[in-house]
Length: 365
Length: 94
Image 1: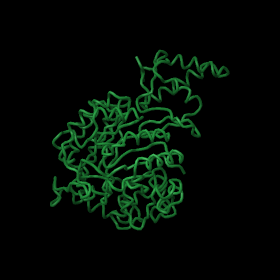
Image 2: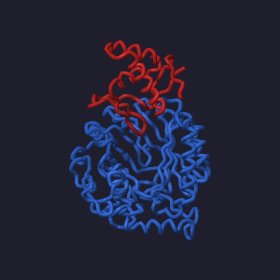
Image 3: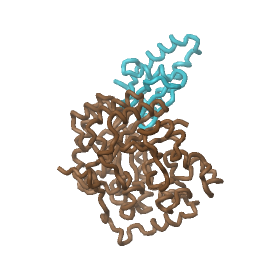
Image 4: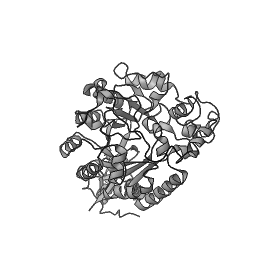
């Protein structure tokens, strides 16, 4: 079994305060972030393991002054280097430095098509800069993806968001419904769309894909609370992805830290190969031996792998049960109860909690 | 379906490139994915540089594989380039 992707969360520091931030609730401070050389060694080890793609993410990766060095280190390790960014901190000089270092792909996140709404979600004024930056990106030889995160508050503007991506000449558009982990779970009741909104979004995407076929690729991630079957989270636990957090801990996914009792080994203490092949955390839910019923005897177990372990943990308190979003799950009632409450008081619109930096990280202009 | 013709000059799009390290097999890396190249795939992709025309690629491959059935390479190259166009891996240079 070979990992295909390495997700490097090189920092948890971020100038945005998105109400659906996917970072863990317990973020890590600047002081314990891996230094440049340790990341470079990790990328080298990943290349030797067979990893193809490196995703540099955060937090906001641009807050690290050594980002261009990290891009170059990824390329030296034979990896395809993708940067996932809000664009805050990216000026023309730095953009050139990154593409000169060999950056293959840049994914720029937008919070909305309308400036005031976008700034409201991000808790900062970022939208206009992103528009300007997109035009700069198109002057470089790098693949350009526009990322849009959608939820109850902005879904009505989905067509407008697609039009914005077209106008910005994105090679690829990624539209993802918020997934309810980390900070997003705190704000779930103000962000989760209604069923009617979800169905409409699906129809809009289908029409846009037809219209833009061969011109702009659209990838779409649904809100799994409305799915009949769970998502194949991470393509199966420990089967294709390794995530390294800012301090060097290796996790099977973004939210795995929410599962109690798992110990995540650090790339500064153990080899990446050992972590991938033998560490208890990566073996915990690999394959089918851990599966409960109804997954164990289900024909779909090789397609969705029982769904998401972290979601099982967050919704039922037990990481070893079937993902409750599955309509066959014994605790699917938990998801139905959430859906049944959407839009009812006290969970009206805008009643949300911004993500703020941990005390040691506050950097305000 | 597309504008592909003998005079087309295919060129890899930004963010699409051959894997440099000598792995077990030839891989074409693209945003959020990779395509495993079999057969003449690598030789075709190497020539998607905006200078070779489709006809050039066919002629060069025919020279490399003189034993290939007549017409076989032309069909292979056209079909393969159509697929790359559809996946947005190449553009056709004017």
